[in-house]
Amino acid sequence: MAASEEASRPFAGLSDVSIAEDIPVEGDISVPVGPSRRDDEFSTLDEPVKDTIMRDLRAVGNKFIHVLYPKRSSALLRDWDLWGPLLLCVTLALLLQGGAADHEDQGGPQFAEVFVIVWFGSIIITLNSKLLGGTISFFQSLCVLGYCIMPLTVAMVVCRIVLVISSGRVVFAVRLAVVTASFGWSTFASTAFLADSQPPNRKALVVYPVFLFYFVIAWMILTYSPQQ
Image (tube, rainbow, N blue to C red; front, side, top):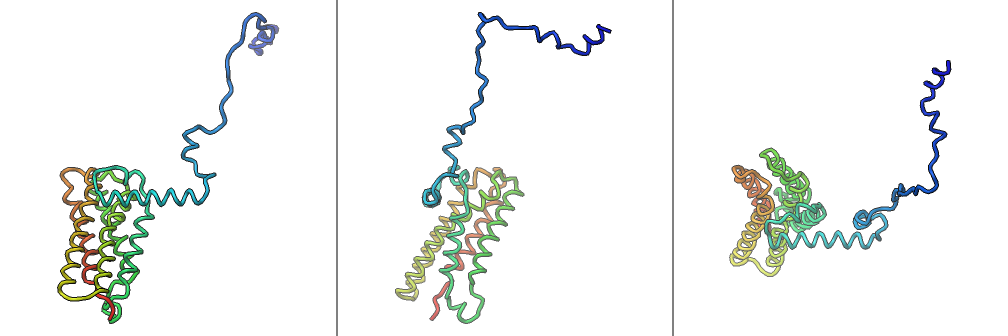
């Protein structure tokens, strides 16, 4: 009977165990509950809205600089965003409004048409890149293709200014030179960022759709004529 009671309480004898006062007990079992320093650096919950907006604008500006001076860098891919592509797309669509083709109902590029061409074309190129084994993510590719529209948007601004001044063969030659240079710059910049993310034996299959994408946009800019 006594044996069964002792077996049912295997730790009963531990209550008589005591620690001598001359044996020091050391250690710290406290767990820090405050946020780490790294978390504080990236936390934006307590950041003023003005600081957040200015930081985002600086990030967009830095990406524009990367497009102006294209080189094989992961900065544009690592810190991707779609604010810059959205701004460029809206600006380009607004600048293409009011053409002669729109006025005569000849199917000129409307705002929605330009918007769909830019974004739908970017999505198709991105899917093509992924299917060919590209290591770049979906939104990273959209970011690169969208930011590289900037030279063509600048070309559209120049063409609008030139068309306001005068018209003729000389003006068309100037527009052709500006649009061609911008088209080459956009294609070169996008391929410079996307080159390392594609298999070496399939790069041509990725560059060709990019070439067509920017060519369509360049053609819309070159064929634009102001409303009389």
